[in-house]
Length: 293
Image (cartoon, rainbow, N blue to C red; front, side, top):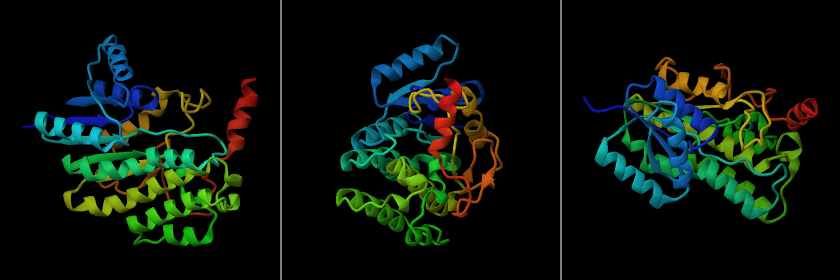
């Protein structure tokens, strides 16, 4: 019987590191801690080693095709497959990212990278495997206010090309200086991050249709506002607390849970409900900051 393998991207710190820690304690197989930076990745492994946990490490920059190819070849040669893949790598960006290059970078890391992984890493996921895309409350459809794109993204037969057009629309509007903040919830704050995470959540639905034939489940989830470097330490939950639901989803959730958008408490939400009150609100962060002062 082949060795079971779990891979967590962007896992040298924050939620990713906590997920690796939890999997090392419960998963009956090899757990890969991966990071773009080798020294930081190895330092994270040493930290876990000191706790009696022993993940394997491999360099992985999800935005770099060559890096992903090297990781793919390593896994194929050593284990010939993956059972659990958690796509956690991401960045948030500033509150009002209006610079085109910054917006493009945010979308490249949070969304375009999943397309590289879909092409190169998804084929390694074994039949009946599980994939989890770490999204955000910024990734719920209620973050979009533009009526045309609500209609396009809420189509039950949405295709990846539709999602790519949505992303291109946003980037072009930033480039042309025609971006309308009213097209995005909450006055257009963290617009690039919202667009990237909405695209990621929508892509999960499309990917599930493709993976059904191999009985692989893929879901996206909002991990909550977590105290990590990405949130500059602002949040309601520690990384270890936030890792509980991701670990549940890949180890314990029913195999019938597929193509869903899941809240940090494990509740399955209707991603298509664009009128819902699930979108990210900057006031939540500001109120939390005031309470800390």
